[in-house]
Amino acid sequence: VRRRSDLVTPRKPKKIVQLYSQEEVDRFFSTIKDPIHKLMYEILIGSGLRVSELASVEISNINFQNNTILVLGKGRKERLVLISDRLKDKIQIYLSNRRQRYLFESVRKTKFGTRRIQGLFTDYKALANITKKGNVHQLRHQYFSKLCDAGISREHRALLAGHENSKTQDIYSHASLGAVSPEILKKLDELGL
Image 1 (cartoon, one colour):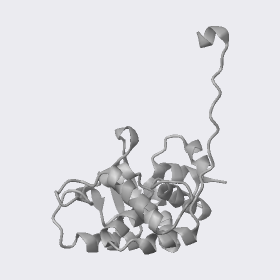
Image 2: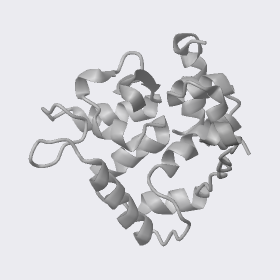
Image 3: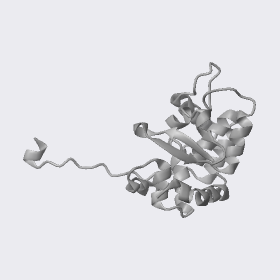
Image 4: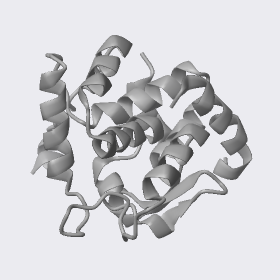
């Protein structure tokens, strides 16, 4: 019917992402006393993982030699995510005395659920007195915005984000991963991610 009558559905304009300030991020992390929870959010803000990807990370998919994590992203597509040396070291320390399948597990030896990760984020955000709207996905936006500010190209950010269309990266802006990973790893370490 729409085609015959030449009706066009208007597109929703893309929202500009409201990022947390560095002071808000620092306050957020200062409220987290549980080292496991702190590491969970450090990985999210330092790798650009989606919450569902973090919840499903199996230890066997972490390659400490290459600073990568193999994740199953949207559309059940596999992609590699880079982690800084700082994050790699923290993850290795965390795992040193653990025997588990998933990176983050509950006391019942099941993976942390996405709702649990979001709920904890909301609680810590309230403790930090952060009133800006947003959820745990904002940490992913923080990561890609920092990469943009550090001069990482749109194509490489799209590759790291798991986006097929590099234009998707435009919301963060107000090849091959192997070829660029040393450059990006250096930037991640410089940014303290």
